[in-house]
Amino acid sequence: MARRKKKATTKQKHQFAKSLGRTAVTGLFGGLIWSAAGLVCYLLNFSKVGPSLLFAPLTFWSWRNKISGQLIAIAAIGVLSIFIASAYLFAFSKIKSIWFSIGFGLVLWGAVFFLFQPLLNGLPKVTEVGWNTLTTTLCLYALYGLFIGYSISFDFEENSGVNNYSNQ
Image 1: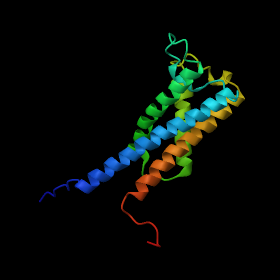
Image 2: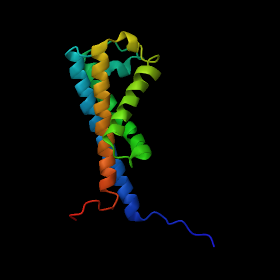
Image 3: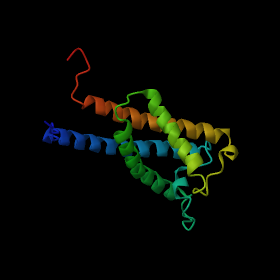
């Protein structure tokens, strides 16, 4: 006899929707916080690239490197970060490790500085950006990955319905 697959209960669907909503909020605020930190580092000359690097392919926007362009880029990175956080939720939410989350951020850094470098006109090659920019951006991406990864994994574990603590 074939076994029937259990249908997802309403409670499980509600729990998943709640988790997806929290992931979206985590992604939005992660993008806003860490791209704002990137802007501060850019303004203090710790980095040669600011958040407006996102708009580098759009050469017809002359104001993209002004403060208004940087602020719009921060908002756009916040929205883009929602999708990155959702991808993390679906792929890695069961992994609760600080080091894995930091590694996720470093993989994102590698994707931006190696894979997307030909598309981003304002991003010099890794060998040409300088040690300050390398160190600053590596740290920012590592902290972004830590924020996204650990927050989502913690939320997933808290809402999994399993009591992991002996005092409950």
